[in-house]
Image 1: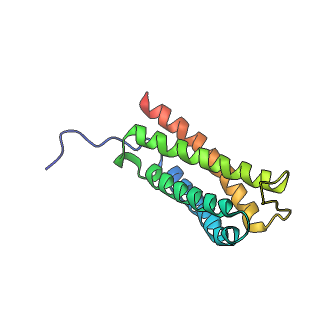
Image 2: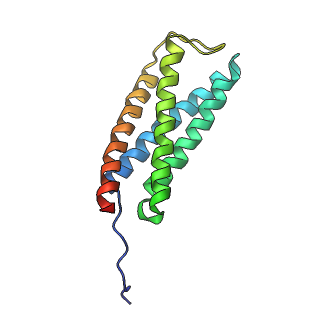
Image 3: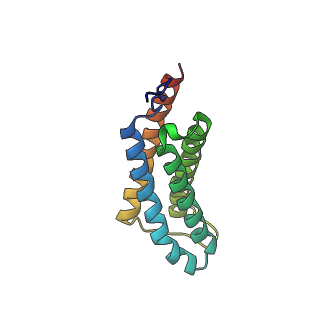
Amino acid sequence: MKPLLSPPLDAVSRRVRGWALLLASYVAAVHLALAEDRYDKTAHYVGALFVVGAMGLVIGAALAAGGRRFSRPVLWSAWAMNVIIVVGMFVGFLVSRTVGWPDYHRHDWPVIQVIALVAEVAYLVLFVVALGQLRRSSD
């Protein structure tokens, strides 16, 4: 039996959603891999922030990747939450390498973390693309 109304088209293309989920998963994995090391040192809050940020990023990316399964406010909220988390992680990394956080000041630039920074910037670019697609689909 054919439905009376066809389902709505995905507001954000599958390719953008897939890449966003992949990038968010990589950034989350890097932070989870480093969380235990940071959590065992004197700055316990850094490890806790790594875990909370990684979990929020994966949950938000999974919601954003859901496409039309969720309403438009849920999609907007998921993308916005992830942008806030990604920007926070990026700024947090730079602050920890320059002026430092209380009980936490690093001087190294490990390759895996630099790649995560690139992934965070790429996620922001995908957000701009998704934002354009979300706006176009609402017209």
